[in-house]
Image (tube, rainbow over all chains, first blue to last red; front, side):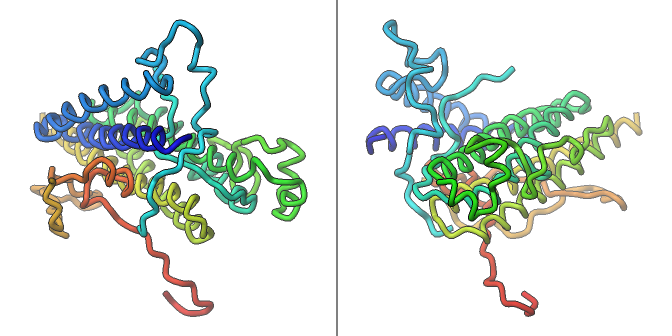
Length: 93
Length: 190
Length: 64
């Protein structure tokens, strides 16, 4: 996976992870308007970033922006455990 | 129902094979405190929770555990994929290799296949939630043992990530427990 | 940029009448969050939930 694709995928993973942690917080704080509005903000950013990525590199979700009429890339493009996605800086903790 | 997203929750790229580490890490796939067990436990308990919040917590943490199951099995796969039979013998994994080759199969650290015998799902939500709090602590502790066994940053970082998730899950189950306790107290009064 | 000044170490239980034989985990209040890239690196969006693991070097026969 080249550096550009790695960093774009990392951006999606970072956003989606943040969204999921927020999601779990909302499950136990269902009326927290601060969390709700941050969720909306991140969700919009994610949709855009994900669509951009899918157009270029193929699908992350089956029905997303990675659909093309020539080939079923869902099956044909590499699977996550074989993608050799590096590019995340090592941190001390 | 579940849809699959074709990406890992966090990047995993293990550049150096290590069969010994694979043998240890595999317990978080098929072992008593592993991610598969956690997913089955939470997704089983969610039906009989008395509040929407508790149901949501079980549903959504259960779902995240499926993603973690994928991360653990990815680590085992990457650690083993280029191993020679010699390396496998040296790591005392010849028995596993005879049964499975380099495929991923859910066992614990002692080689026992996955079992639901170490899980519980009770209609009593207080009991079930305490089971879940315990499960998260056990998983956290197991990741800490794995971290002690490891010195490769490519492996250490996903392990630290997975360990931190257990801390967060414990907090959510704790909050769900508070709400269920409150709900039960209210029911007694009215 | 989120305000990441350290959160208070103590979180109140906020239970009007804590009972015997009952476990209480404090409810997490809303607060500043990490930026997404840092959240992924730390393993959570929420600074107060970060609990790093630093194993003590094991000394045979010595209590840690």
